[in-house]
Image (tube, rainbow, N blue to C red; front, side, top):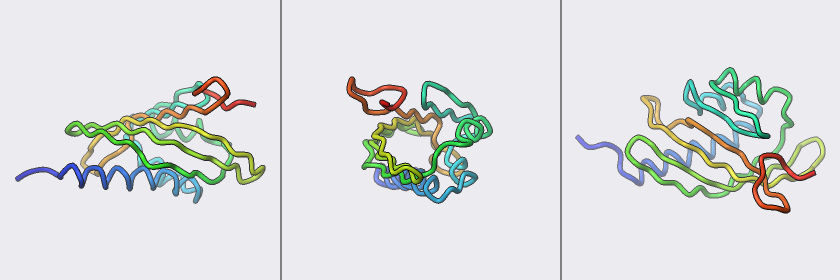
Amino acid sequence: MTGPSPAEDHAEIRNLLARYCLLLDLDDMDAWLELFTQDGTYEVYGRTAVGRDGIRALLTGAPGGLHLGGPAVIDVDGDRATSMRNLLFVDRATGEARHAVYDEDLVRTGDGWRIGRCRCRFHGPDGLAERPPR
């Protein structure tokens, strides 16, 4: 018996990354956290959160808004993969837009592909930075 085809892996990963944006927009933090491995990490604003509880704590109080993720560049190597995609975030309260790049390390688990590490960097006048320009 063979495993999933490369096309099946790419389709599942694209769906995972699409759910990432939609679940944030729907304020469904519990379902969003399920997209990560138990020990997953999230890097944003120069801080790193570890595990689902740590990620939840880091994002508590973060502004809500619209996350428009661009198509991902995905590289699969067995049960591991990497992805990179751009993002446009529009703050729902202020309408302010932020431009960012996500890069992720992904892991195939018994429950399907999950995010093992997600890093968010922001576009600014000097290129990508840990924080958005002010």
